Image (cartoon, rainbow, N blue to C red; front, top):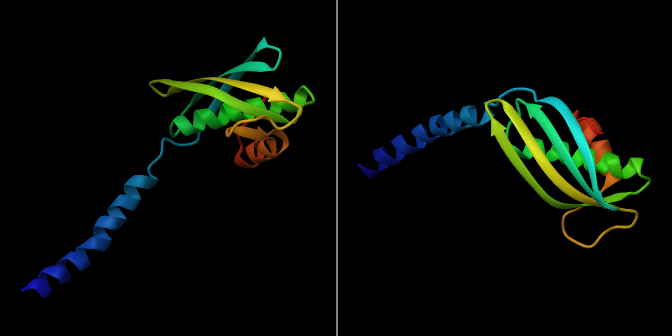
Length: 131
């Protein structure tokens, strides 16, 4: 009797797992990038406000802001940025991000640093616009 129960569980498991896979693959579609606003706060501290529609989640908005920060660092002739904070808000299909980064010529202290040149290249490969 136990063997039949185990066989039933094993044959049902692939169907259950495939159902999970289908649900996980559902997304809202291709993101639409609606613009970047850059505000110099103080010397090397910069605020990036980004807007987009159709994001697949908070990570898409954070990536958009990171790409903006990396390009801005390169435009200013610096090679690095350090993430300070990002807030994300959603209204319907519209997503807004408000991120703050420090930019610098040398690799800054901290765990959330980015190499601007590498990041901008990655953004281009992923189709994420920059400043």
